[in-house]
Image (tube, rainbow, N blue to C red; front, side):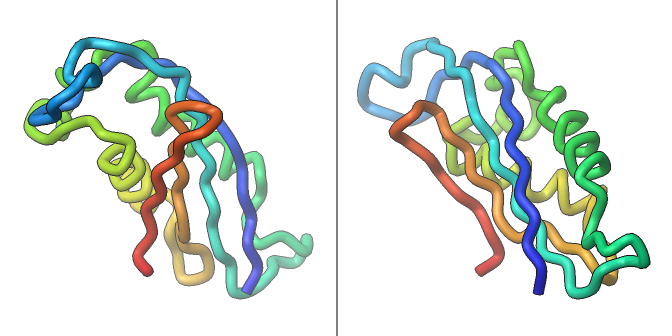
Amino acid sequence: MYRLKIQTHFASAHNLINYQGECENLHGHNWKVEVTVAARELDVAGLGIDFRILKRESAAVVKLLDHKYLNQIPPFDKISPSSENIARFLFEQLGDCLNSDNVAVELVNVWESDYACASYSLT
């Protein structure tokens, strides 16, 4: 199995729901996102997936969240826009556009700071 990883980022504001503390107040982050995909085989060019495709699709998905108030964007208008829920949202959105017979999104890491990260995967 081959693994490929890219990094991207976005900035947004949110407030956690049902949280007892300062993060229940409106605040923002400069989020860093790491996307890891697995490929079973390489194409004739020796690639599991072209990094350009991986970067383009990841940029399109994070653009949905960039410079937005997350609590107003589905599904975060109904669930708390925690790092964990954001990681799952990105994982599912990226899976919809990247998963194929050969390639699958394996892991999404969402860093809300240099020191705090949440991840989502199927395993």
